[in-house]
Image 1 (cartoon, one colour):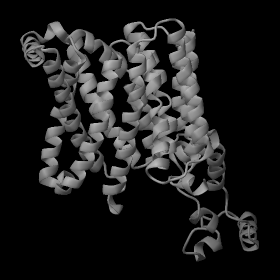
Image 2 (cartoon, helix red, strand yellow):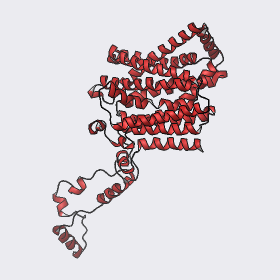
Image 3 (cartoon, helix red, strand yellow):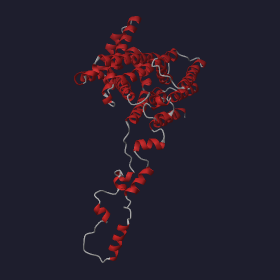
Image 4 (cartoon, helix red, strand yellow):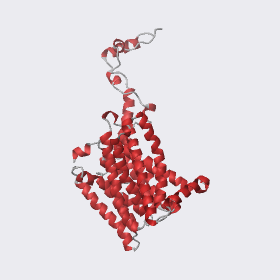
Length: 435
């Protein structure tokens, strides 16, 4: 029952962040409500107003004997060169009388939908990373394989931009993309280490703290005062962390990964904050919805992440005296020789490298150009719920009572930090003006 409830909550909240209020968002998505469309159809079928001249003309036609002449329109229509005002002002009738909706979504609504999808997809990342660490041997080797796949997708993109959009391979853009990658790469490394001894569902809930980090960085580094709700959300998040960690401590099952995982929201949150400012800094005014910049930043980001993974593997091999690079080379040769025997691992590498890393990073960077931080905060509140669901579905993890309560408190903190679902109905920039 608990797993079913978590899945239903995640699905319902994903819908709520895209469709926050029934009447307002239906009008935004479909253009008009059903009642308004019915009124429009009625108006479009109305007859012209009955003027005295038209009435006399109709009476004359009724009293006169029928003639073999073509029917004529009322005089006021023959003399006028344009349709009556109430018909000329009416918009064209939609398909099937307006009963079928038109999905003309705004850019902001599309960004919310894409982030909701990212939250669901990234929820599978924790279970996959945990499995790959067990299958490959060490998390460092698994990280190098995963991010090599992601970087292989990024290199052709940068080569294309070098020929067509040289400003996207300039040093300012590359510097910001590499900076984002340094923070994200550190977060990925900490996440992989924590998952060796901690559960995937717990790490998913801990990562949700990153949405509290962004407004705090706005306050401390950006000089932007934050509303009271941000600090209230921080207090609720601390209670959630207390439940998550306290449950493990009380049951004498507190693992090193449970504590190490507290560092990942700091790195991921900072990377998210740096990425948001990089998009706003380099995006031209006449290219507001251009996705080329987010793609370029993500490509540079993935190269930096691969560099961190390679340094991690080298340091681990040097410190432990193990043959990490040699073992990794032998592992790649085994994959190439018999790929069908390693389909689960290859599928996990492709999924985490191309989808949860490269694909999700592009979607996040693109959405940050359309949404405010409050919007992204509310949408990402669903991600730990999906993480808990995939941890149960893929590796059979169970949620204890303390983890369930602490996780729900973390989700509540994310929603409070974003100003609630009502924040999604504001236009971009409205929240800053209204604080």
